[in-house]
Length: 150
Image (cartoon, rainbow, N blue to C red; front, top):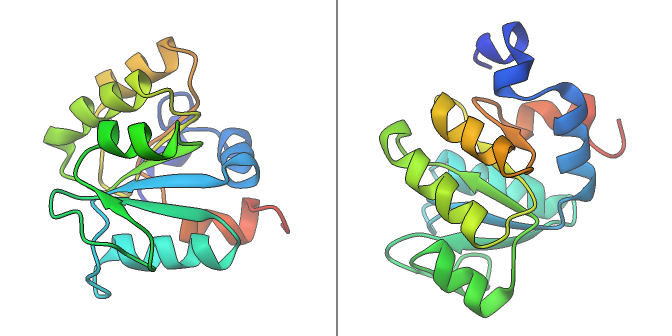
């Protein structure tokens, strides 16, 4: 895990925020999720799914994953599926801000930037909108320590 998450929980998400998202987030829109089983997004989504979370893939190719429909954008996904509980972001940091803004616009309950996805200005905008935000952390690593059964 990036060490910044522990040095600056105000920016990267507190353990309590992570605990609440893992506990309460039931529908996760995973931006960058494709059917490529070798990618981290696939492995993280698989783990979340194994804990009963519903996964919706958001990827420009919009190829179904886990037998569920996929969407090219968050807007398309939200129009079809409703607002997500969590938007998990697996894209380059240079693109993360626009996705964070779109997550706010579609009514996401929380936003989670995966490892190495860092945009402090975007995180501040999400928090200013009153939405819980986690950055540069991974549910696979946080679940054993902070997940519902922890």
